[in-house]
Image (cartoon, rainbow, N blue to C red; front, top):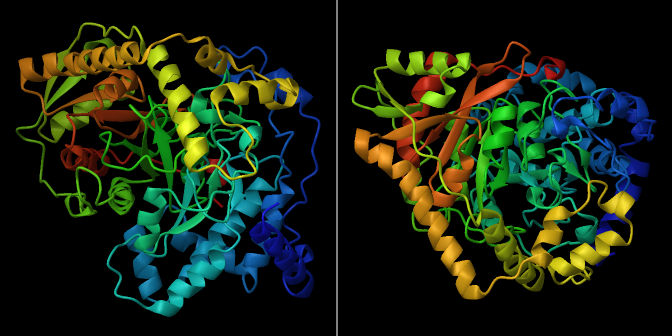
Length: 548
C-alpha cells in the first residue's frame, strides 16, 4: 500500500469518527453481496450473447469502499439539500450550471457533493446499482472548495465541472486498473496528458468509471461493460435488458444517469461510439492525434484516442477543447468550445447508407436533416477488406502495453508484458477471467515481424480511406451519416473522426444514435451539423429510473 493511500485511510477513519458518519445518511445502504443466481438465469436465454451474464457483482472489489470515500466528503450536505438542488442540476448543461453558480444558487463544492451523493444513493442500492463507478477521488470536494475560494477569471467553462474518467486513464489519488486484477494497485505518480489539460482549466476529476476490461481486448463475445474490478455495468435505460456497448461503458452510463457533468472515454474501434449511442449520449471519437495518448492504458498506439462523452453537443465541445494539448496537430485555440452557429444545412451534402434505410429512426433523422436543408445522397459503398485488423490490434498491444507498463505503471504492478498478464490471470481464472482471455491468447500466438506489422497498418489505413473517399469524392459529400458504431471499424482504420448524437428509441425503449463521420480535423463542421440536428429533433431523454 502506498504511503499516500495509507495516510488517506487514516484521515478517512478520523474524519468519519469525528464528523460525517454513515449513520448520518441512512438512505445509503451498506453493501452486502447478494445471491445473483436468479438474475443471471433470467438472462441465460437472451438472444444476444452480450446479455448472457456469468457475474454481475465484482468478486474483487468491495462497493463499500466507494461509499466510505464519498461520505467524509459530504460534510455539511444533506438529503434535503440534494433534493433542493436536483431540479437545478439534473440534465443541465455546463453553461446553465455555471450561471447557477454565478447567481449563488450553489457552489462548486455543492455541485460536486450533489454528484457524490447521487452516486452513493444509487450505487449502494442493490436494485438500482449500475456498477458504473470503480473509484472516487478522495479529495474532490476539497479541490472544489478551493476553486470556490479562488474566484478567478474563468477562462474556460470546464472550470469547476466534475468529470469522470474511464479507468484506463492515469490520474492522481486513484489507481488506474483498466478493470483488471493485474492492475489493482496501479497508482500512477502523474496524470495522463489529457487530465493535466483538463485540470489546467480547473476541471475536477470526480472518479473513475467501469469499462469493458482491458478496453474490450480480453475476451471474445463476452458482455460489454464487464470487468473483474467493477463487475457488470448495466444500461440505465434497461438494466439487464439492453447492452451497454463497450468499452467506455461506465463513462457513458455515468453521463446518462447524471453521475457527473461529463465523462471521458477512449476508443480504438467503436469504444466511445458504441456506449454513447446505447446510453443516448453524445460521444466524439476525434481524429487520431488531436488528443494525447500519453498515460492511457493502450490497445493500439495506431488507433487509440480518448474522447468526451456528454449529454449534449455544447458540453461535448467544451470538454473536447479542455482535453486538447498544445502538442497536438491542432492547438487548443483551434479546438474552440463555441460551436459555430449556422442557420441551416443548405449546401451541406450528407451520404446516407442504403443498407440502413429500413431503420425507422434513421429514416426519421434523414427527414429532419432534409427539413434543415441538407441534401441527402444515398450511398452503398463496397465492403471494406478488414484483413489484418485483429493482427494489427494484437501486434500493437504486445508492443504498446509493455511501453505503458515500463513508463507509467506503479512499482507495485508486477506484470511487465501482455504474456505476464495472461499467466497472472490463469492463477485464478474463475475470478480474474470468467469469460476467458481469447484476445490475450491471440497476442501471444501472433507471429509477425515488425515489417509485416507496418505493412498491415498501411494496408488498413488505405483501405479505410478508400472506403469513405470513394463515395465522398463521387458525390462531393461533407460527411456520412451512420447508426451507432456500425461503421466505427472503417472510421478507425481511416483515422476519421466520428460523432454520435441521440437519434431516438426503439419500440422497446433502447436508445440509438445518429453518427456523423467525416475527414480528419473536420470536428468543428460536424459539431455544427449535429447541433442543428440536436436542436431540431430533441431526441434525448433521461432514463426514467434515474430521474430523482
